[in-house]
Image (cartoon, rainbow, N blue to C red; front, side, top):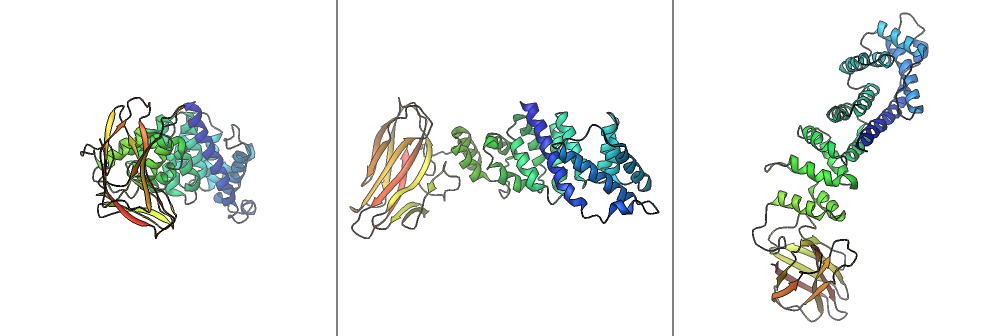
Length: 389
């Protein structure tokens, strides 16, 4: 399966390269007429030969032909004789050769110009067929650096290939060079579900304590990992980025000292036009207008299989016109989920025991929910801290 994935990646980009370049041929001015004039126009002959090859590739589902029409070969030869620096002509002549001469000629063609997508597409296909992953990625890199239109096709393809474990280390070696397309690559990877597990591994390999985070999409990657139930991986990435929690609490940022950045491992805050939550000056502030409410904040928390205690400290007593509660609900996909724990909050709670010894669930959603009554003007309250030990 891994070999097939590599080959399909090469095949797809070959198809796309053919489609991209067929349109570009139309920009040449009557190459068929130009090749009949004297002196011989090598670039015109190259254009005619290239157009025929590109059409053949497109009609053949992106695969390069095993045999080249003798007339096309003759055109390519004439192009080379007239202009020895015609890279596509050399590539077309190479298609009619056997290995290793074919690869040698293709490499020479590439050395003349790295902007010829036809040549680059063959190099990609060849690297894929030989399972040369570093070579494959290097050619993707070349195409992205030399073609303004390639990114929309190549970047999604690269993101999908990251689902293959064998691509993680070669990607790390390439991305460590900080290529100009890295920003777009990470933006695409976090939206590619099959690749996010390996994307987290790749992110860990590239992490540096003093790095600039402008390139990465850590918040989106953590959120994608949680959505895919890869909870341990999401937590590991979180702690890599922020450091280990030394407070002893199972909750992250339970004192609300920091503005949440990597939700939902840290607090995920919700807000509508009628109610919402914010973290301000070391407090979790909850506001709601009359007869409104819902989920204000949540955090994914890993609970051990034992008895724990929870402490909740509001800034002031909860007013009568507000119903506030903290709930713990299993976040894992299970055949029989444990019953949700709901803790009504009216005043400070200290050392309330929670027993998770036999639930079979390790990851829970800790939700803060609330509702303002139909009477009154709504509420504005704040929580100083939540601790779970």
